Image 1 (cartoon, rainbow, N blue to C red):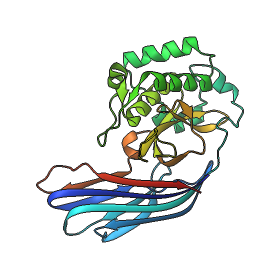
Image 2: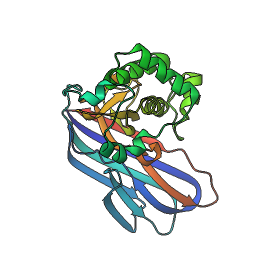
Image 3: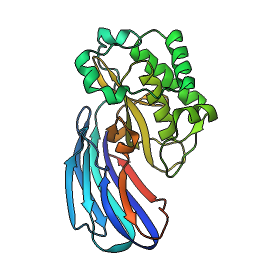
Image 4: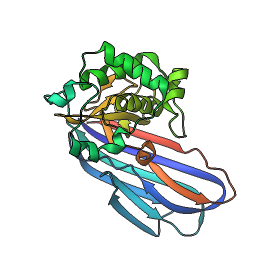
Length: 279
């Protein structure tokens, strides 16, 4: 599917502030079923220096440095991106993916170690054990079962700002934003040795009547298939209706905007306007 997108984010401060260095992870990625045809970014106030770079995990990001003081920070992006993966299961799982806990070979285990770090919360470990015993014993089946269970048992309530909640809090309350559900699924995957990372991006089909917003899901590493997306908000494997921006073992390193400011005011919640049209 071909998507044309426009995303505007504005921070307004009650007093003039000095902006520290900022990173913007708002450029759709390119590769593995997603092709970026066009991307533009505009930042106001204009940075004194700006650059595009790759982070340690291969995500594209834009760095910006500022001088002077300002009462606002506005970021506007426009993009054209093509998503091509219609079938999320277009692969043959390797033997390593057919046993739980999943046995990752030594080279990949070292490379993927940040994506295997467990949260060591007893409630999460117990639920992971339940899924393992009830499932078909494969990594792919486990992720699908956990993903669907979260979709059916969590009430998704949008939260405009803030980091994801700890998995045990989301599990106890049975409510959370999409990023909370993603972090819980991430923890459940890692509990049985499945490498998993957090993804930020957009979805083409938000709930009925809702406007497009930033979205979060996970990618699980399945031997034979590589990184495969799963969205607990929808209970489905991701296909051509998800647009990925960034993915990281640490959710905060996939945040669309990261930066600091200096001044006598509290950090404002941003206002977003997102338009995504399919052609």
